[in-house]
Length: 82
Image (cartoon, rainbow, N blue to C red; front, side):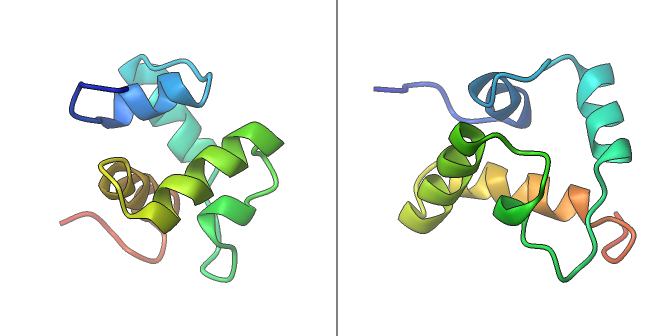
């Protein structure tokens, strides 16, 4: 059981990605998606990463909010930060 409040850094760790702030910023900058590409359908995910993202999004569990944040950040050209 996962007992920490999920964060973007922890999400990157769960996805097997570098979770440093610099690596997260670079990932977001270099993996922008168009609005017609759903986060879980992005071509850069491994099958395990895809499964993790979609399963937690569908469950609407504690990870869903963090997955939504990542989704927004990967679509920033259409949804600018305030």
